[in-house]
Amino acid sequence: MQELLAQSSFDKLKAGAIVPGTITEIRQNEVVVDIGGKSEAVVPASEFIDIGELQIGSTIEVLVEKLEDKNGSPVVSFDRAEQKKNWDNILTKFPEGSVAVGRVKAKVKGGLIISIGVDAFMPASHIDVQPPKNLDQYVGQTYDFKVLKINVERQNVVLSRRELIEEQRASKRRNLLESIQPGQVRKGIVKNITDFGAFIDLDGMDGLLHITDMSWGRISHPSEMLKQGEEIQVMIIEVNRDRERVSLGLKQTTKNPWDEIDQKFPVGAKVHGKVVNLVPYGAFVEIEPGVEGLVHITEMSWTKRITKPSELLKVGQELDAVVLGIQKDEQKISLGLRQLEPNPWDMVRHNYPIGARVSGKVRNMTTYGAFIELEEGIDGMVHVSDMSWTRKVNHPSEVLKKGDEVDAIVLDVDPNQQRISLGMKQLSDDPWSDIDGHFRIGDVVTGSVTKITSFGAFVELKDGIDGLVHISQISEEHIEKIKDVLKPGQQVTARVIKIDRDERRLGLSIKAANYSEQQLAAETSAYEAMNRTAGTDMMNLGDILDAASSDKKEE
Image 1 (cartoon, rainbow, N blue to C red):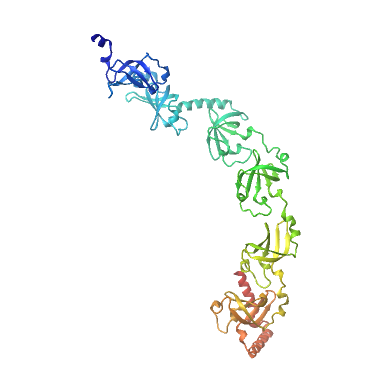
Image 2: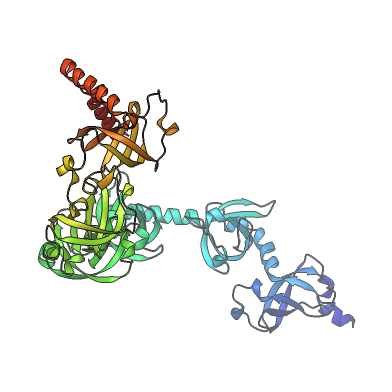
């Protein structure tokens, strides 16, 4: 027993000691080592760079962490033994500023743990030129690192991979700037995409590929053509060696399709393309790579009322179109969709001759008139001045409402402007052409109040003719507000005291309606005498009516 104990190293085992051990078994996730203890120790496979290089029977050194665990087995570490041995000569092996090869062991808060014989720390900001978002991708990888700082007392080593990359790029940048020339085609990697372009890594320095140099066609954002990390071929457009800047072009690596555009797509030709973009004023259609034409919203249909292109088209839709015009210098092509169909307005003069009676539904109204739909896509317009012989219509809503069925007469047709003028009043004769056959001064008439204004009331008489009762002709008594005396719809009796053919108005007097024959005769004598002496009519009724008409227009 004494001889066996003398041959063993059991008495040398103590926590913190580095002892030799013989590999007795290599398992999938661990290595079994005999260190001369009561039982064998187990070392995790993760502590070895390559477990495949180990052999059963070979000797390794391990650090004893515990003589026994709860199962009576010793706890050892190959990695800690290596680190303890390496810390003795770390400054000699890897002085500050030197390059060390290391393997990424684990991700920790703020960076990575790197094994270079001892555990070292690399901040996340020093992993690459651009700090990566995912650090897990580096675990298990082997890289070169620059030793930034060593603190032996605290056993702390700080590494940087970024500084090595930047030094290498600086060297490559100098070589690249010496050799690069405009016109050369170089391979690059899309490094970063912005709204105005993309930065391309030329393996030594970055060049700017502006959005205008990406495609012969129009693109709204660089991401439509490029993806970050993508490898592309670019042409060197300009080199500024003093400022170390390079301008790149992607479209310049292909032939400009606009050079022979007028021969390839002559005006009037039918083309096939795909809708690539919709804007409020039209749709852009790609008719070949790098060549887009605009279909303006007005060129989409002869008859459909299109307020936005998405009502008819959608992005990605394939269609045919007709070339309407080419502006080669500005790289613009005008296209039309409606030109594929016959123009229905070419038949309008034949279908709606001047003087014809037509009917339709009120589709829309504006301040100046109403649009009548004669057939799908074909409207005629009735101006407010052509709605009534007898009424002064200020807004079409006074006569019509949307959806009303209307009869009218065709007054004019302009196919070029796509306009048809209609008239409603022309369906009947103008009563003012024979006004003397309807009314004479002194006639007693009855009618309905249609409108109240500040200066008087309008009364509708027979045949739709309007008469105006000025405020001074309502009552013998002074009236402040007409609405206190008269109401719309009220039936009144009045006497015709003026006929104004130019303004197409009758002057009425309610207070004179009840005059006796003697009163009327006296009033008439006074009126005639006033005309002879002053050259005016009764109570300046002409001026009153003119002023009333002027006030109404202002309203």
